[in-house]
Image 1 (cartoon, one colour):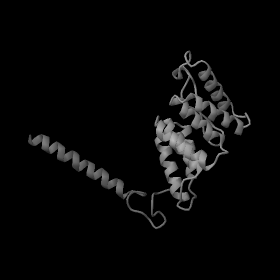
Image 2 (cartoon, helix red, strand yellow; image 1 turned 180 degrees about the horizontal axis):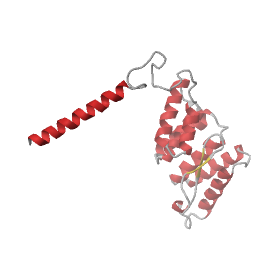
Image 3 (cartoon, one colour; image 1 turned 90 degrees about the horizontal axis):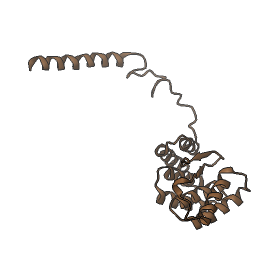
Image 4 (cartoon, one colour; image 1 turned 135 degrees about the vertical axis):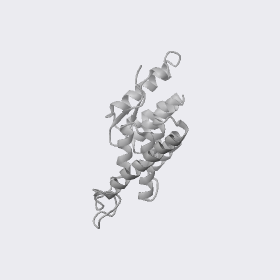
Length: 193
């Protein structure tokens, strides 16, 4: 029992010495006048736009982090605009939070009705929730606003039309829907089987 205590005490003392040495090295816990914060960080640099960071995180499949980025963007900008609402809705869609995604995307299209990407993402949510008829109408609106230029929106409209025509033969689990982020990037929401 005593030897076990000595070994633990020796290990703790060894960690303390290693910790103490780390703290005394350059860039450790002691800061010089020119390094008040973290060493090597340029405090004068302009921060990235939170909305752009959120979109990049969605593209990378990091939906929780994207939500945090959009929340920070809303704080920085002093409120929620259509782009932030759309991004938050898309991140919730990626997380499978369909109710929250639908609510946020509906708010986004009320704010700015001219964003085809937001309409498309709302259509994807509605398809996921089994609201095929409404989703078809939403995809038509997105397609019209986009002038038919987005392959993802066109493909989603085709899938919605096929689903409404052949509702007994198609399954949503076998279909591929594309989540479109603002700026034209496509994100695959569900891979085809």
